Length: 165
Image (cartoon, rainbow, N blue to C red):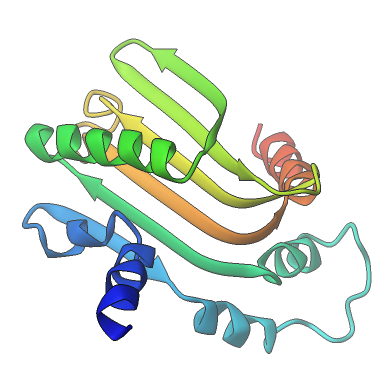
């Protein structure tokens, strides 16, 4: 029985975990424990829904994990793209949007839940951004998992974009 369960548990690990050991890949991983710890720093006196800090804390409330991998290496970028395509198929992700600008490509996918206002995963892949970042990055994979309220994310993003114009 243990031999049958082990491959299932191993596959439950993120398909991108193998990128951690590659030379030329930078990474950031934030675990559920870190999100739980951040919740303890939530300001107690602030009740306003308009407060940016409170909105950010509400969004991280139900997050499980954030992973981001980036590389300047074109060969690794191609490997990342194959991994993303595999993840899309195996996790049954739905394309949310695609953006093409010059040589750059941005693709965003989500895993829907029974509640159309929530997704359990957001996967973003950016490739060919070397010109825009002046050699700092060729590809980026970002994965966010948890119980993600699309409405809260959208509101918060809209507000940040308006404030930074």
